[in-house]
Image (cartoon, rainbow, N blue to C red):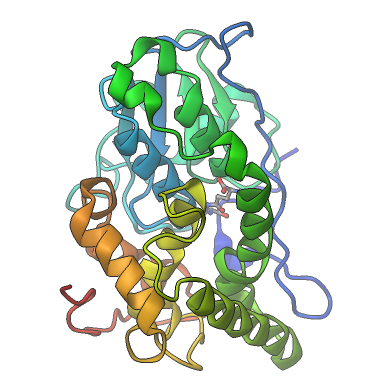
Amino acid sequence: MSTGTNADISKMKNEPDGAFRRKPSSFRSHITKDGQYTPEKGRYHLYVSYACPWATRTLIMRKLKGLEDFVGVTVVSPRMGVNGWPLGDVDPFPAAEPDLINGAQHIKDLYHKVQPDYDGRYTVPVLWDKKTSTIVNNESSEIIRMFNSEFNDQLSPAEAKLDFYPEELRAEVDSVNEWVYDTVNNGVYKSGFATSQSAYEAAVIPLFKSLDRLENMLEGKEYLIGNRLTEADVRLFVTIVRFDPVYVGHFKCNIRTIRNGYPNLHLWMRKLYWNIPAFKETCNFEHIKTHYYWSHPMINPHRVVPVGPEPNILPL
Ligand SMILES: N[C@@H](CCC(=O)N[C@@H](CS)C(=O)NCC(=O)O)C(=O)O
C-alpha cells in the first residue's frame, strides 16, 4: 500500500550512512513488432519534465529520430511539491501543459490509475500506451533504445538509417554508459542528496574523477565514441548542460565548473547544443533552474532560485 508520502521528495529516506540510493524503475515493458506493444503511429505518449535529465534524454532521441508525429508529449510544471509533479492546469507555469489524455492532475495519478497499490516513486519520463491505457515503461535508458530502433519500418529511409546504438560500438557504449551513469548522471544526485559529509565526498570526488576522464576522452574529438553521435553523448549531455546552472550550486558539485575547468567537455556540450536542434529545442533553463531550487526544500528551504550563471550556456 502507498505510504502516502512517496510523492513528497523532501520526505525521501536515505540509507543509514546518509547516502542516496536510486530505486530501480518499475515499468519495464517494451515496444516491439512481435510483442504486446507494437510500434504504431500515435499510439504512445510521453509525460516529461523539461527539468529532468532522464526525461530529456527521451525528448532528444524522439527529435533525433523524427518521431514527433509518432509519439506525443505532455510537459509537466517544474515545481514538484508534496504531490510530486503537477500538470500545467494545476500549476500554470510557462510551457507546462494539462493532461489531455488522462486528465491527471499530478503524475502520481497515472501510476495509481495503472496500479492502485503502486508504492514506488512517481517519476518522469512515463511512456504511456493510449490503446491499453497503461504505462509501458518509465526507464529512460530503455525508452531511448526503443525510439532508436522500433519505429524504423515506418520512418523515412534517412531517419530509419540513423542509429545511435550501432552494433559495432555497443560494447563501448555500454561500458561508458555504466560508469558515466554511476558517477556522473547519478553522481550529481548522490552528491546533492547526501545527508552526511562522508556520503557527499564519496560521490563528489568520483564525479570529478569521471569528468577528468571524459575531458581526456574528448581531446580533439567531436563525440565520445567512434567519431559519431551515439546515445552515450545524449546520456552525458543532459547532465553536463545542467552542471553550471544547477549542480555546481544546488548539489555542491563545485570542485570545478564546466565552463572554467573542462575546455573539451565545454566545447563538446556547446557544439551539441548550438548545432543540433534536438538538443537546444529540448533544453528549457527556466524549468531546469526552477525545478531543482524550488523542489528540494530539504536542500534549499527558502526556494530562492539564483540569478546566475549568466548566460546559462555560453555561445560557441
Ligand atoms: N530511472 C529513471 C529515473 C527518473 C527520475 O528519477 N526522474 C526524477 C526527475 S529528474 C523524478 O521524476 N523524481 C520524482 C521523485 O522521485 O519523486 C529514468 O532514468 O527514467
